[in-house]
Length: 208
Image (tube, rainbow, N blue to C red):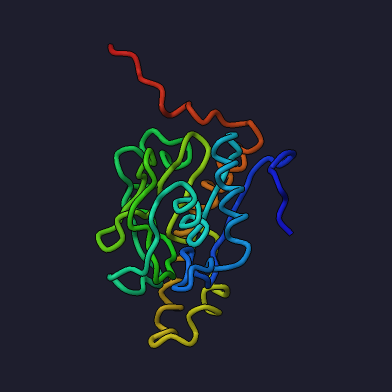
């Protein structure tokens, strides 16, 4: 059951799922609880509650703020992949320490085709240009997964053509994924607990 507000919560995290973020042809939401999730996401950004949306969660974060999510003409993106940081990531408290081309895990048919007005693009890839973004100071969305292990991915991919190969690729990349994204998750927790200043990497350095 979803709360009406985020009062009393240190953070808000929305993970992935099989549903579409956007409405069906009959106008019904991708899931009956999505309108409430989007309402909470808007409140989170408005009241600066640290927020992290992953895959579907990132799509809902974008859509809740006027972005567009749709079935991608590029097709399914799945398995161990690389994304590239954009310039703005250098001044982002979560993304600044991330390597320029970090390993990630992907599994999605839909994409964020248009970011919300005012969103800051933090990572991209050639086929799916909006891989990570920030809204305001404390809300981040990613198209890729940072929370999966090989066993979880295997449950998703075992029925796909070439599934065994995809699972092996994710297993091979798992150490690199954890090395990058476990500290990222710790930094997000530090933001949520007030131990990390969200503006510290955006300050202008003095001229010498």
